[in-house]
Image (cartoon, rainbow, N blue to C red; front, side, top):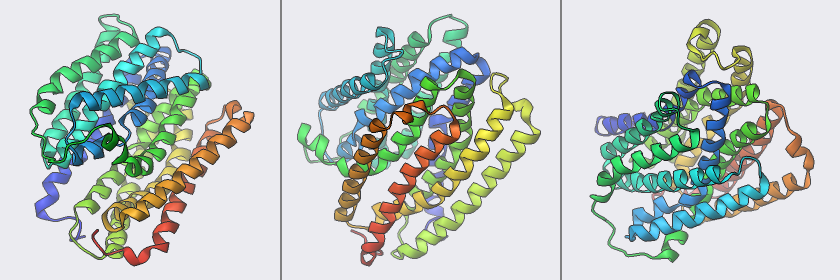
Length: 396
């Protein structure tokens, strides 16, 4: 693995790995402190906001890394995207769309999108330690939701609003004291056009991975919804491991893309196997560690099923994605993005046409729908890359 891991970048990947883990690890705390109803209320708002964040950012992290933008321009773009996305969501699911719900989701989404965009900008400029610090500060701010609800007796909405405002205040100086390294100035046109391909390729799959939690928490019975959401919290580290491997590929200096792919694949296989082994031991012999608000038998069943499919997906997705953005031409990426849009549009039409989709009430059915979608995207990506395999090994 000398083409991926060396002494010069080991520290950087430790910091990046910690940041990736910290970005979502705080979600594990909530079911230990909230009862089933509160946990479900939190998840409804959080995963609605997470869906909006995907679209409100709209690849702006790539745009801001390459162009110099007025922060008001970026903030306006984020706010506009958030409102449009929420309007579309409200047409699909009108449940729980109270004024408090809408206001909370918009503010939480805008603030976290804005922080995320400039955190990536800081990372892109090589300040990975500061980027990690921002991630930690945001995570700590979100943990404040627990004492606000339980000790101050504030609502979930007010607690989320408070947490988002605190995260903005404590990260403000880090974000705004950064010098804009890009010399090219950009406006709204550059903001939306520069990162569109990366946005499509990198966000369609996360959309599916968030949409199923949104669906589960709005349509499943509360015990199933809570177990499903917590099962994802236990399965998600597989994706974090894959994300670290992907970033290791990005930083590699070798030109043999095929060798780097198989080296990455082998390391990822061992890490996933190790994590799943620990997870199985915990679910069977350390059940006292899990929150009492979650049905352990149901949790165990969901985790086993969920982890099996996602482990196989992660094993291929992250090495392939690393090779795609490191060793293929922009034109190939644009073709893949176009194919993704076509497939996503077809899936949306099919789901709208089939009313049975909204009648899904079993977690296995929901996971099968997600897997069909994401594995189709992965297959398209691999086929188009193989078609252009003569590009591999060329840094472009």
